[in-house]
Length: 315
Ligand code: MG
Image 1 (cartoon, rainbow, N blue to C red):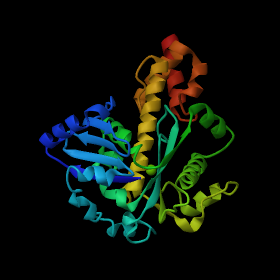
Image 2 (cartoon, rainbow, N blue to C red):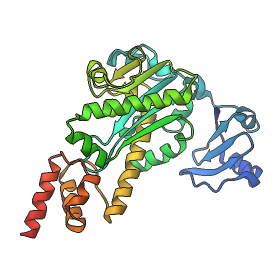
Image 3 (tube, rainbow, N blue to C red):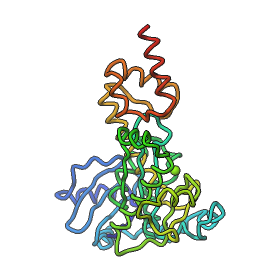
Image 4 (spheres, protein in one colour):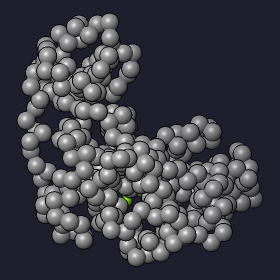
């Protein structure tokens, strides 16, 4: 599947909206003016003036409206320098790569979500256009908007370790590091399956342990071949595949927290600060202590603090 981005005047976009009249979709994509689907192409026009064409015949369809924007020729800023950050090969930022990252490991409430995503080198400029960058620079609103668009652009796999299961494996003695290694590995295997027979030029994991420890954790698993995997801290800045994975993982985490909030009847906070102790105490008081394992990571010190708050209230 191909992708083309055009930068167009708003008057042109209005003209397009008329042109695609019968093919317009009811989709409410954040920041968009319209979305339309022809037999061979999905078209999304944004208020920024960017128009995204996706599909087999997208180049032909886009050709009706203008020439693809120049950025597709641009190189990734900083990509060459990035090799200094780890043992990643020079120029990895320009390769077709699978990137993976996780969210939720430091949050008392909610699961761990791990995403691996495949970004082809020719889609790097497109993802940049769509706003993909280090997710730490993006608020939840932006994360959601970008994730909703890129989930249809990049092949990815999401692994969600829900709280009940997390607590069960944690109690059995598994470290968080091992859980993460298993989840990253599985997500990457899933993406490799999805894109086969195509193979990525590189696989980049946002580093959370030493590579030797990572593979040690995977001793009993079918692991992705060592030679093809690179590790780096701050990998989001090295390849957009990691940034995309990070955005999709955060999106999944936010959605999960929303689900928990709905079940709790109040807004569940993120993180592991005092606000989560208060929220967990509130949860215990309204639903009972047995509900906790499906909401939180029990081994966090926050559990004791929440229980102490409950006892204080009940005294
Ligand atoms: Mg990370």
